[in-house]
Structures are given as structure tokens and as C-alpha cells.
Amino acid sequence: MKTKFYLYGCALGAAVLLSAPGKVFSQCSCPSGATPSQISSWASLYPNPTTATTSVLNFPKFDPSIGQLQCITIKGKISAVSQVNITNNGETSEFLLKRSLVPSVSGPGLFMFDEFDDILGPDSLFSQRWIDSLGYGSKSITHGPDSIYTNLDLNANITTNFAAYSTNLGTPVQLNYQMNGGLTTLQGGINFTQTIITTQSGAFNLVYFWCPQAPLATNIKNFNASMNDNVVNIQWQSESRSGSVVELQVSTDGKNYTSIYVQPTTGNAGNHQYTYDAAKSGSSVLYFRIKNTDASGKVTYTAIKKITRELANTGEMGIFPNPALDRFTLKFGKEVEGNLSVDVINLTGQVVLNRTIRLNKNISVPFELATPLAKGMYYIRATNRETGVSYVNKLFMQ
Image 1 (cartoon, helix red, strand yellow):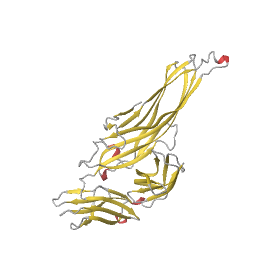
Image 2: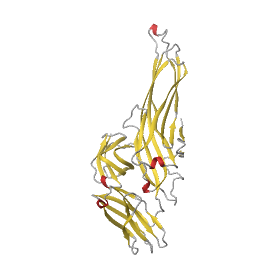
Image 3: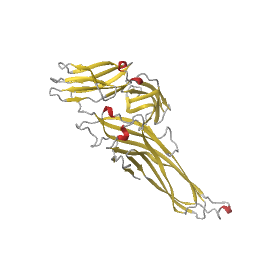
Image 4: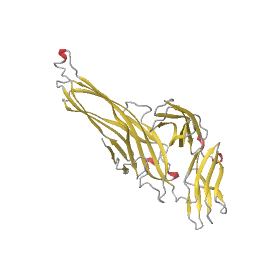
């Protein structure tokens, strides 16, 4: 079997390339040569393994106000168990069949699939015309359940024409998963009935790689913003450069910025902090950046930090199922938006797993463990990087 990737949709014309897991390919870099920032989100095929053959995967779109989208990676793993039942309805007795299964994912500028084929038989399914009258013989047989896929990788990269992923932000990007295929008789004719039952599960990860609209300020480090009780705490480190002017700016639309603080040009090296009253902005979404103007007049900026006010005081986080085996779902008391950093912590306080997930007003998010954890109790800590809100709950692994 072999994974396939095809260009899908001439109107979009997106380039779809094979991607090595976890690797940022060479086409995906900022114009300055810097490594792009990432926004990651996950979607499961189904809440639990199921025999449904289609699923819609919803992902948040990229907000172009924070920067320039450079490329997109889509990585998934699926597992499938298949069972075949065949019954002879004719006079022939020897059957040889070919089973074909084709899982696929399609979406804007994307079509990727895999092909699985195997041979079933030969099976001696005695002719019902004369064997049944004697009271013996079998005319039905079951193959399986067979493990067809175990964590099959379906990966692709999109490098051009991102309109479908970065416009109409109120609607999600929808990728469509399907399992197609069937049985073909290589021997035995066509007078038989068949049933294929395939149970599937899996999850897909969509990652946006993006860069700031303007060149990055190289003298500004560790720029970060978080909010607590409508107060935005902004921190950064700067290097001393003679004649440079550093301005902290805020925007309510990601396009038009106002300077709210000008850092003194003398003695400006070291750690800096500024607090901003978000309530006075009258906006539920705020964007922060730092503008740097050097002695020659050249202007550079930091990456943009997005803060969502209305999600600063969300409710509790539940974990289902609990105890869990290799996957679970985080459920929140209200919609959550932003980059969620999820830590799995053991009883000694060690972070054994960390993952960043992009949420777009979600109330639940699936979490699948690539490597099972040892039995016992853990703590799950989820922190919204935009708002600073943290959730903690216990997880029991069985």
C-alpha cells in the first residue's frame, strides 16, 4: 500500500507536497530567513472508534492581521479494523476476492489518500443448489476482524494560495474524510452477497506557519503578553542600541496601531514590563507589538501578540473518559479561543508531555497520546497563552 497526494482544485492551485513529520520544509521560511511562528490545532475523526465512513474535520482559520501565512502542514494518523462477510448465492463453490480500502482527506487545495489491498481466499463456499439439499456444507464465511491500519500517516504540505484558509474567519476550514472501497471477485462469479464493516479512529493536526508583515526587530527578545482580570501584562527584553526608539503599540483590529509607551533611548537594555488596562479599549480583542526605529530611521517590529478579553475568566476543565487509555477529551465550561499549552505532569512534578493546540471558540478538544503513559495519576494543566488563564485537573491512566 502506498500513500498518495494529488493536486485538488485548479482554481486554488495549491502545491501539495509530501511532508516528513515534525519537519519545517525549506520552502517554509520567513523572507528574512528566520524560522516562522506556528499555530497548531487538532480535530478527531470521531469521538470514539466507529463504523461511520465519513467525517468533517473543522479547523480554525488563520488571522492575516497577525502576519503573513507562509505554508500549511496537515498531518494525521488513522487506525482501522475491517471484517468481511460473504455468502454464496450461486452454483460455483470456489471464491477468491480482492478487498480494497481507500481512506482519503480532501479540502481546499488538497486531496490525499492511501490504498490498501489484500486477497481473501480461496474459500470453498459449497453451492446451495445441491449441497444444501443434503443438509451439510457451508455457503458463508467471515474474514477478520483484521487490523488494516495502525496509526497510518496521512501528511501533506500546502505552500501557495491560502485564501480558503485565511478569509471569512467566522467559519472554519473544513476537511472531509472518507473511507471508500469494496470487494471484487477474482474467482467465483458475481452471485454472492457481501458485508464489510470497518471500524475507524484517528486525529489530524493542521499547523499554520507564519511570519510578521515587516522585518523582525532583532534587538527585542522574549516579547510576551498575558491578561488577568482585564489587565494585560506585557514583558520584553531589549538590547542597548544608541539612537534607537522602542514603542509599545496596541490595536483593536490588527491593522491600525497606536503607541502607548515609548521606551527611553538611554539605558534601555534589560528586562521591561508594562501593564495595560484592557477595559478602556472597548474591544474584546487586542493586538500588541513593539516598533523599533534605529538611528538610521529603519523600522522593524516584533511578532504580534493577540489577547481576547472575554475569555479571561472561563470556567472549569473536565477530562473524559477518566480513567483513560491512550486518548481523552478536554471539555471547558465555555468557549475557549487561542493557543492552549497543555502539560501532562506526573506526581513528582515532572512535565512528561507538552503540546500546543490552537482553539477557535471550542468547548472541547481531543487529545491523543502517541506513546501510552504508565498507569497511575497525572495532572493536566492547560494554559491559554493569549489570556494567561490556566486550568488544572486530575487524569488517571489505566
